[in-house]
Length: 187
Image (cartoon, rainbow, N blue to C red):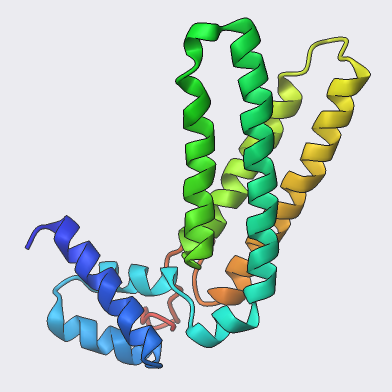
């Protein structure tokens, strides 16, 4: 079995066993007997929250999804206006940015921990890029648009970090499982 197939199989098993109500420690024991990759198994366990946590934070997750949709639509509109007016031949570039945001929305809808981490990192990078690209003497409209989008993006970053911490309390920011003093994974 190739590493890619092993990854898919481990991910599928983790999601199935979590849906059945098993604890992550029990799932890890099962995965240890079936697969020969403890690190990969632990990493996939760090990506997925328990179903009861999904239910508990369902409304906050929906709020994050709404914010991501607003940012995606804004990027489509503003990038589209810029590309069509300045560089008409660069129209295919218009698809790349929204596709990344749509993928983030997909991950957040699935409660995948990667979606929350990527939202925080890409949101911060987007803020830096957005304010760094202003001209030396920006128009008041540009400042207003950037300010409104900044508030929305900051809210999405805060929600993403908060949801990741609450849904996956025993994982690091970059979705590695935490370990105790003895070097054993904490689930």
